[in-house]
Length: 308
Ligand code: PPE
Image 1: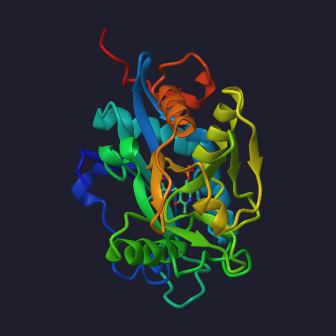
Image 2 (image 1 turned 60 degrees about the vertical axis):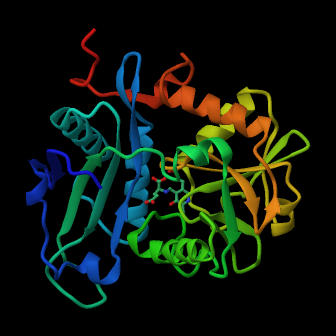
C-alpha cells in the first residue's frame, strides 16, 4: 500500500501516520467490521468516483446486518470521500471505507462499543496485473466453500467474512493459480475471492443469482446493465462447475479486478473471447467517462477537476 497524505477518521482529516487504533479494538479480535472498495478514475470532466453513493449505501447495509451503527449518513460519507480525495490530490485511486467496533468491551458481544469510521485512499493499479486484464488468469475451484446465508450474511461486506476469501485465494496461489472460485455448500458456483463471476455460452451471458451466497457486487450490477444495452441477453441463474468448464468465455468482475478474463479453470482451457473483450471495453469506457452514457454513475469530485 502506498501512503498518501491524509486519512478521514471519525469526522476529521488526519495525517496518514496518525490514523491509529488500540490493539484492544473489538474489530481486530472478532472481525466485527464492514468495508468497501471503491475506485476513482480520471475522466474528461474531472476525477470521478464510480457509484460512490451505492457503495456507501452497501456499507450501511453491511453494518445493519452485523448490528453495527455507523454514526455517519450515506451522504456524509460521500462528502467525506470528496474531502479526502481533494485533500490528497490523487486524480485516480482506490478508496477503502471501513467501520468497525472499537475499544471498550472485549468479549464476543460488541454491544456498547464505539464505532470507528475511517476512509483511506491510495493509488492501486490493476488488481491482478495488467497482463491479467489482457490475457486472463488461471483460476481453481476452492476446497473451501463459500459461507452461506445462515452462517453469516454473505450479503454483508464484513471483515470477518474475508477469512473465507483469504483461505481460498491462498490455497489457489499455493497451487500455482492466480485466483480461487468458491462454490456454495450445495455445489453451485458463487464468486471469486474478491470478484463476481460471469459465464458466456452461445452468445448469452449467465451469472449466479443473488440467493447463491454471493456478494451483491456493484460492478456485477453495472455489467448486467451495460451488457444488456450492448445487446446481450443476461440471465441470473444457478450455475454448476461444469458450466464453467464448458463455457465459451468466463470473466470475473469487481471494483478492484474490473473485468478480468479467465484463461482456464482447473486447467480446462477457456481462452479470452470477444464478448468479454467488448464488455471489458464498455466497462472501462464507462468508469473513465469515455462515453456519455451512465453519467449518473460517475460522481465528479469537486476540487479535483483537470486544470484545462
Ligand atoms: N465478491 C467478493 C467476495 C468481493 O470481495 C467483491 C469486491 C466482489 C464480489 C465485487 O464487488 P464490487 O466491487 O461491488 O463489484 N471485492 C473488493 C475487495 C477486494 C480486496 O482485495 O479487498 C473490491 O473489488 O474492491
